Length: 363
Image (cartoon, rainbow, N blue to C red; front, side, top):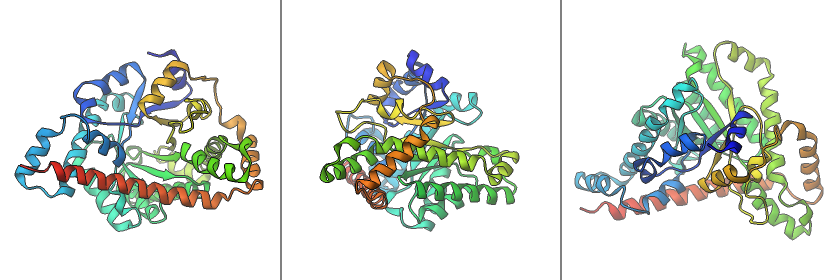
């Protein structure tokens, strides 16, 4: 095992892999990453599945069988993706058991075309929860305005949720409120709160990509590459506020577990920045960092893990956000654009996945 990864895990950061494929499962590579790279969870999204399906022959037999049975393409996609998720959940089950259900988790996203339809999102979440039928599953629900009531409803039914596509601090507070409301409803139903886990996926690199583009136009290059980390650090400050609230303490006393902040989109997009920027600068206890394999390898090789790099820097983060505002960056517009683009990108990947499956559903 990498000494650096051990140090990162020792700081309370759960290392998750932002990738899945049947070939990775079939070859035993996921087991290797668990064993050698401290990986304790897996996240997926439509883009990852579209990429996995486009490579190799791992899906050929299932695709053939689905075609022979005349399965409709949408249900075929569910059959393919839930198969991989179920397999990954079984591979990670020892981690789940060893951590008392905190880690060893695998995330599966609802159809992104439902991002603005609360009732359909809940129905899809229920269906996927039933299809995978593993306690270490997370259902990913986007943090759109319409996603918030879906998060509350899913949590209230005992479904563990990974809230995705969070960009703004205001929306993150809304996500935490939706999660708490779900736990309160679950408690009223008599459910065991200790079995309901949740993470909130706060996106990082995409914030820098969008704001850096605006800073170039504004002639303020000295502020580039700072917004993503500052935004995430302030998200952790908001998380700490909720963890210190009476509302949370009541739920905690009833057995509930925290909704951990998860740093997503941690692959660095700008080659001028350190390739471990969003790992080194976002070390804090009780967090998750989900990494593409390239970032995981870079972290294992040369990340600079120096302890908590979030809580000591709240004032610096506020100063950075203030400087961005003074420079003319419209934060509200940035996060609005990022959410819209995020949904659109996942919808496009989902359509690509449907198209790929359609082409292969030929007897």
